[in-house]
Structures are given as C-alpha cells and as structure tokens.
Length: 259
Length: 338
Image (cartoon, rainbow over all chains, first blue to last red; front, side, top):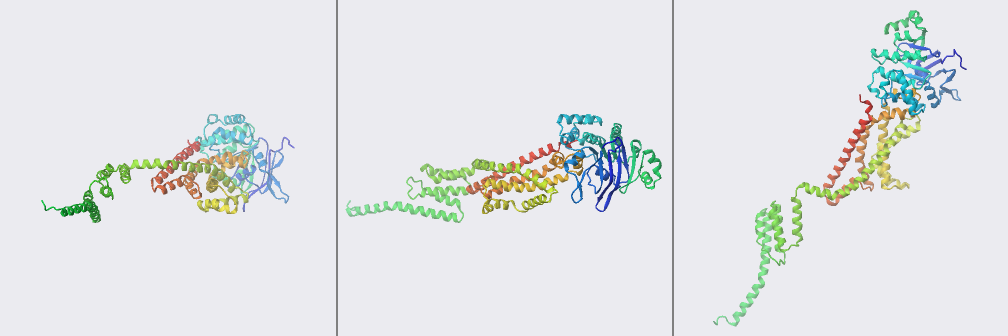
C-alpha cells in the first residue's frame, strides 16, 4: 500500500560485517520521496558500505530494505538462511536505483553518448533510436551535449562525473545514490558537479549523498546524518545539525578537522 | 747384291712384323708409365708436373684403352684443383672435340659452370627448384595456423570464464585443462592424440589430430592470458555495469571483455607467432607442412638452400603477423588516445 507519507526507502536494522569488522551496525533510515539525505562522517565509518548495500553491491547480513513499501532483495531458504534474490530480480531492482561512484567508473571504450545509452540499450532493451533520444536528453540535462561523441579519456574529472550522473539518470531511477561524488575531483571542478546535483534536487529527485563537502550539505540537504563506527550518531535538518549538534564532541572534532 | 739373300729378307720381314706388333704395346706401356709418373708427382704435390706429363699423351681418335680421355680429364681436374678454370675447361673441350658425347667431359663442364656462376644464380636456381614443394607445405602451415587462430581464442575465453566461475566444478575443470596442456610438451600431446588414442579405439586423421592438439594447447595458454586480461580490468567497471542493472554476463560481454582487447593483443600476438613455429611439430604425425617439405628437400638434395628458404618463409609469416597485430592493437585502443 502506498500512501502520501510512505517513505520511498526504508532501511531497517541494516548490518554488514566484513569478517570480524562490523561496518554497518543495525542502521535504520527512512527516506521520503523528494528528500535529499546527506551522510557525513569520518572514513571507515560505514557510509559507503551502507550506500552500496542499498544497491546490493554489498550483501547484508541482517536487516531489511523496503522500497516503495515492499521488502526487496533477499529471500530465505527453507533453513531460514537469507540469501540474495535471483540475479534477474536484483538487476531489475538496481535499474530503479541509480548510483554514482567516487571514481566515475565510466566505460572507457564507449563514447560519452555510448556510456549514457548503454543502460537503456542493454538493460531495458530499448531500440537504438529510443536509447539515443533518452541519452541526448540526459546529456543536455548535465550540460554535455557537445561532448557526446568523444571518449571519456578526453574529459575533465568534473565532466566525467556529470556523464556518470547522466548514465545513471538514463535508467529513470526513482532514487539516486551518490558515493562521495566529488572526492576524486580538483577543487575547482567540484562546483559543476554540485550544480548538476542541485538541479536534480530541484526536479524532485530523491537522493542519498555521502560527501565531505559541508557547504553543500548545509545548502542542499533536507537532512544531515553523522555516521561513525557503523552507526548514526546524530541527525537533523542542516540548520539544527550545524547549530546544535556541534555540541556533540565527536562531530565537533570531525568538522573542525575537515573544515 | 747377294748380301740380301732370301733368308735375310725373310728375317727382316719377320722382325719388322714383330716390331709393328710391338709398337702399340710399347705405346700402352709408355702411357701407363706416364700415368704412374703423374700419380707420383701428384702424390708429392707437384700438380704442374703431373699436368705436363699427362699432356704428353697424344690426341688419339681410336682411344682403345681411353688413355687420351683419362689423361685430359685428369688434367682438367688438376687445373680445376689449381683453380685455373680456363685451362680445365680447355682440357675437357679437347676431349669433346674428339668425342662430343663423352659424358664425363659434359658433366665436368656443366658442374664447373655451375660452380663458377655467381652464388645468387645458384641460389635462385635452387629456390626455383624447391619453392613449389615448400609453397605447398606453406599452404598447410597457414591452414593449421588459421584453424588454430579460429579455435583457440574461443576455447581460451571459455576456459578463462570457467576459471573465474564461482561454480567450483567448472573452475576446477578449467584449472585442470590449463594445468594439463600447459604442463606437458605439445609434441607429446600430438603423439598421444595421433599415436596413443587409437589404442583406446579413437582414431584421427593427421590433420584432425593436429588441429585438436594445437587447438587445445593454445586454448589453454590463451585461457590464462584472457583470464589475466579480464582480472586486470578495474573492479569499478563491473560495479558500474551492475549499478545500471546489467547482469554478470551482460557486463562481461558489453563492458569487461571489450576493454581487454587492447591489453590482450601483445601477449596473444606473441602466442600466435609461437604458433606459426609450433606447427612444425605436426610434421612428426605424418603431416606435410612447411618444415616437413623443407626436410624432404634437404634430405633429397642435401642442399641447405631448402632450409634457408623455409626459414625465410617462416620469417615472412611472423613478420606479417607482427605487423597485423600492431595494427589491431592500435585500433583496439583507439579510445585511449587523447
């Protein structure tokens, strides 16, 4: 059942371990449609792992992922052991959730247009003409229509990340995940990527963004979450978070370190 | 004049008859003496003296015991030994002037002429003699190479993907295939397939056996190369492909494998150049290819030109391959050009 206030995504008790290390420790998170959630925190705190779990790039040990009211991605066998759903199902779920990586991961052997067309063409089995139309549309959205015929190697870091965003958007996802999208960029290139993300937000895209850019968090986020050692330590609206949570020692020391 | 009585006359007549009879014999004895002296001179290394001695034997049209021919041919050989080819030829010509059909003189002149012609003419003559056979062999070599080039990349890809499979039996099987075919000599594998399997009731024609042997061996090698190529592609590529909803196989086909082409070209080119030379091994299982043809020519004529020619043909093939693979490598990596 879908109601107006129903969260688009609900994470319930997400737990991910790497051997003895618990990377994500029972995290709960509700993300409403159109909401922009920014997660900050020191490296190794489990932010990226949490994000990758939502896209099934990491298989979680415990917890549930509820998307549009349905629990997704995991099945239980007759012994009660949980395991990932069938590859076909997982692929279908992933195509509804876009992801942007720190290192872009563009396909270097395809042109910019080819990169953006690849999802609609191969995954959604659209015709070349239809895929091309979508891709051109997405490229104009990120302002790179003029680069459509070049290979990624010729692009700047900022341009690469905008192509990566266009590639994710071409699948018409309902939710976008950004894993430190500007961490690999020269400072002067960060702005163009955030402009693109900002424009997406204005269109009402639901987004979870892991970043170290506090300025961006302050300006864009509906909610800021501080994560440490696999758990959410504090969260709130940007105003509330940066005004009040600063009293929190660990947040204060983290913020003074990176600002 | 009563001095010359009938008796005396008779005696003189008888004596002269005897003399007449003795003259040829005396000649023959002279000749043998000359040959003997000439031999002695040769024995002591005095070839010019031997020549002078032998030339004393007169020209004779009815050379019964062939002293004339023998002497002149010996003179010719001696001149040849002294590298006076003109005199050698003249001496043989002397024989031909009297006996135009003398085969010894004809052969001597022919072989000397061949010897005296510039080296490259001899070489070209030999080349023309050997080329038809060698080219026939080359066609077989090229056929073997092309069949293996068609088979082994596919076999290699299957083995590589099998090795990377998370399904244990498949990855173990592929590991075993690589271990077996990389760990034993190709020659042994060919022997086993052609000579060994018939005892198990499986018989192949030489060509089939050769293709099976080369195909399996090169699939195993390429399998490891392709696996390395796939694993060298950054992990993020697979994640990005999965993140837009691709299955593992779609990601492999569309994203991962195409990126390996450029990286794979140098090692695969290497393998295929080795393959051109490895086809020589199938000559041991009753296949007549370039190496076997060259070997046959060499044994028949004992002429190393056959081997040199085969080497040149192999070099030609490997050079063409090197060139082709350089071109493909550049084409495959075109997206890396800035």
